[in-house]
Length: 97
Image 1: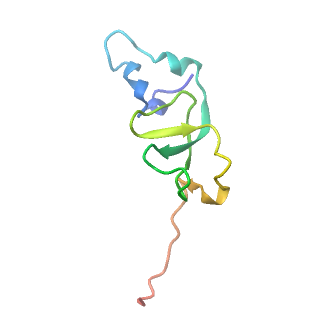
Image 2 (image 1 turned 135 degrees about the horizontal axis):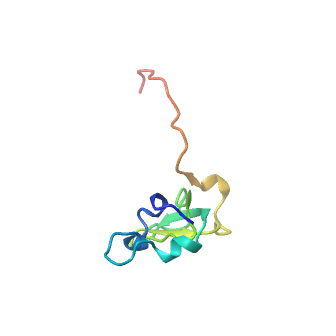
Image 3 (image 1 turned 180 degrees about the vertical axis):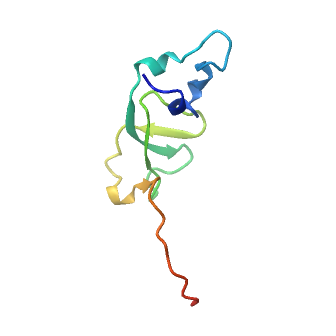
C-alpha cells in the first residue's frame, strides 16, 4: 500500500480523507512505488532536459500539470535526461567575466 505522503499532488488525493465519506483512495491500495519519467504537458518531448526521472506511485497523475511515462521514448538519450535530485556543483567565484 502507498503512503498518503506519496499521494500528495495526485489528482485523486481528494479521496485520502479530504472529503467526507472516503477515508482512503482505492488506487493507493493496489498501486506500488516506481520510477517514472515526468514531462510538463506544454513541453516539447524533443527538447533537451524535458524529461525528469522521479519516484512516484504507479497510479499517480496530475491534471493540467505533468504527464508520467513508465519508460523514456526511443528518441530521448539518457544524457538528455533532467535529474531532479542532482546535487548542485559548488563553483568558485573568480571575479572575472
